[in-house]
Image (cartoon, rainbow over all chains, first blue to last red; front, side):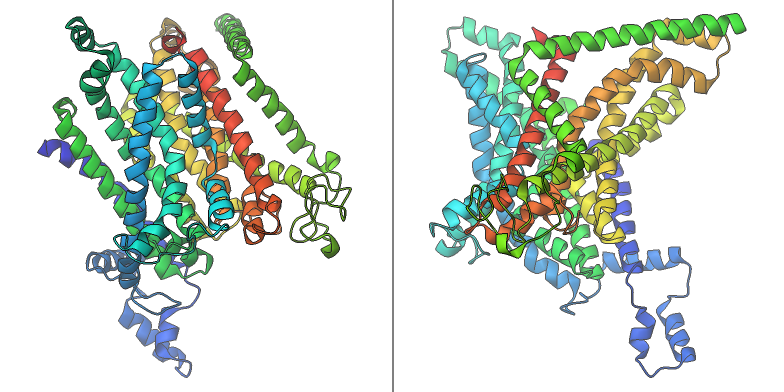
Length: 312
Length: 301
């Protein structure tokens, strides 16, 4: 098990370095010269040069990169060029809303997807199966922003639910109401893939020997499906849901931007379009690291559920 | 030596013909599946419309007329505009045609560049056993990274615009095609003619190009089609966020974003490009699923 985790970390390490390199490069393209800013408008060329030396800006790029790595490890991500507040503080503010939105989406989309997938597998080849699979293909083909626009137009526009911003933490009534539309938007594109994975995985397990045995023992059809087949079919579904977190991340960036949800994704897009390089660097870094951590957790969980994985 | 090369050449031709026949068989199977056939015909029409946009668009997609601003479909103000006008009084139909052109163009370019690179990586990994491990680890790394983050990072470093968008989508297309190409090439590597080719003294380049690539390309091409839907969806999302095509460029994602502000008074301005993206991606996915089923004998039963 420890070896398996170590192996996964080995794969994540180059990704992390790559992401850090992108973050570092972003700070290099900042159009203003930091030394000139620090020195002030009345400084002579010699003074600027002295400050440049003092800040280490005259050193080779790789030395500067090492310095950047050291600062990131101390959670010093620089200051936003627009709000002038530390990037780490900005991230701390936006991190929880993003997690909240993702959880609010998973909590309804995954159970619904699994139920639909199970139903489709049980009624294989019937109209029900075909209808569910057709819906699932539509789900993976629809742009997230269209789902959001339709909900804003018909539900938000009719004044039924709020669609602008986050009106408080999820445990307050206002907060709960304001998360409904973003969570429905994000989940709508997630139900399809989950239903499809469940169906495929369940069809495989329904053909397994132990399922035939259970049937031979006289267990009812639904009991066989749920107690015997679905439990085993869930293992690939769990991993695939984990793998789809990246897909979910893409959707959440769009959803946050549309619904003015104060999350990391919206902050990243805003920072990029307004050329706030330090903030963009921090936001991309935290999105990538968050994604990697989730992946690692899913991976370890999977190996725990199915010990054969860790051994292979 | 000349003789051997001549024989090999005709051998390769024969195999190309056989590959073509296999592909035709797949197409015949697709045509028996009504949704897939409908998707194929629809895509053919859409691609033709996109290619011919400059000649068939009834109006200039960039000429504005503020008097026709937000004119609805069938509105009395704009009887000549079949799909109404947008927030600057531009003909929606012409903009959608040009938008399709830009969106499909960006998707196809990205998949061809990324897929070509991926195919090269996959074939090299299968051919040079020593490269297999490092190359495939690199692919694992790329695959484990969400493609939207490529989009954000590249837009941040290179600035927003169609160019950065195509680069991001290309990078996103590399890993899955590389895997498919490697899988296909590995089964070809087992064939006796690979050994025979080596025995008559063919070089690496000739073996990879004439033997591996020529035998793998139908599979690779089909998976590139499969990736197109995803590339278009991702590209449209990035454009919608303002990180891709910039206004006034007619591109479906940024057109949808443009119409967002007028949702309550003129919903058609954003609904039409959204529906266009949905239908195109849906058609690619339906066709892709059918192609995969047709190619995978396990699923066919």
